[in-house]
Image (cartoon, rainbow, N blue to C red; front, side, top):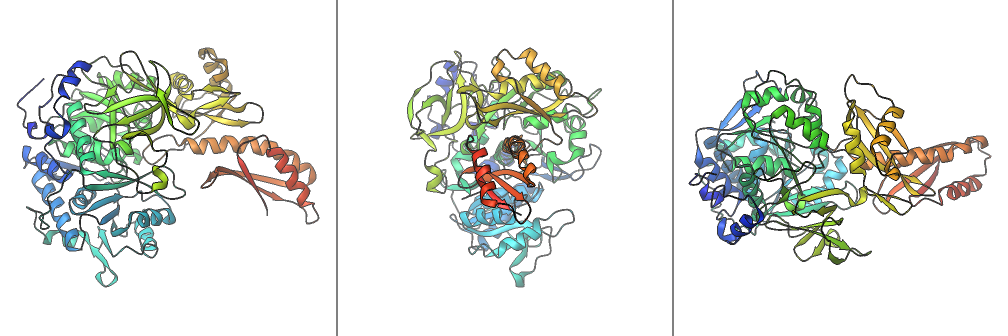
Length: 635
């Protein structure tokens, strides 16, 4: 491995030999705070820009076509724009403790706002696809002072939502429009018109940012109830950029394709701050990223066109790009493939390896760890299905908790328990004390909420989300192995296994499957395929439901809550069917509830003279064996 690299000022000891745990332990003998001199994300970007100031930092593709001419910014131009953005926000009264929220698609300006806001104050990236009420609650919880948002644009509701949100957030003083004219009499300012007026070489605030200062509030968790805001320090985010750079052995001017939204830590830090602070080229794959069909269709040709060094995305994107044409495409630039956000099916990993001719390095982390916390080390044995080892200076334990969520003991080798993590990337807590209760296994060790095990060689294997566990008659079933089997079927593109409520067993496993385009397979064939390959009879799904499209989050993960709700709805609809004999038309919907977690809403419609009290009593009796609460409404 190389030494004397220009990144020495940032890495410390560029790309040391870390072939085994003893080498990592030796590397860690120098304390993290002594090794990493960079204090802030702004300082990290300055390091990246210093490596090749007049080489490209950003290529922006509007359509996602390999042949299109991208909008390109050099590092000198990009860093200047970050400084100008910070100076504009400072001029608007944003100080180190003030919050700048933004709702933007993937644009060059988005990356300017993300890190310019961190240089001026605290940034709060917000998912613009949320409902107005949810967005307003996030901004109120953050105490937003300035909102940066997309101007009026065909095909997007961002500006309309922003207008409604303004009236609901008392702390909000000003709005900055990106790609909009602004209306200063109404407190709306044009970002693009104003930013040029400010110095590009220095921060006019003369701010010297320390690592412990807050950089960002990222919202995570559900979209009901009090917003769950993760507080990131500059040290947290710099450690992510440093760690990812180290693990991928990133080289200046190597390219990385970026299609994850910036309200997700993977997009903002792993695929944003990390490459920009190590002098790489960021290729922005259109404003909608991986949600753009052209990006998926052209994926391998874009890898070829920009000579991408790392192929990285969430597993659903990796599964989708397997269908993109790749015959005759030159992929020799690819050094590593990577994925995370949820478990990569082994069959998908094998297929990506076959296409790229390189290994898949699975990563694992969460918003609370500033994204990647463990990953497969490229220079060690890669075990598909494992998320590898902790990054240097990061730590992982697998622990047993009691019924109240308190620490009991560390798990033995290969014993499944709750994954806990500590290290420089781990956050100090949520904004709300309510969310901090139960968030820690022990001081400094965040409770991931995931189940996993550490094998004899220290590889971490995620065995499922704690709430993904299916409990059938007291027997714990991990859905992941069954999903892996479904992915082996040539017709299956996406698969998910969830628990369906059952009055006797508590839960039964059921599967949802999205087929590949043009492929055919019925439920009985797929269930037979699973049954023949599943040694654990209790884990075989009792039903399989074809679905298209599979519900996904905006960062491409399978949205399992929606599948659980659908599975419960099917059971309850069948349960209520006999009510039709009494002339009553029942309709049931299952959804999230801020108090009870999940609630079934039963709407009944019947003749005026029906005995409503008797019918409601009957419904209550039918629901008695289930843990899911229900409400009865008459329509």
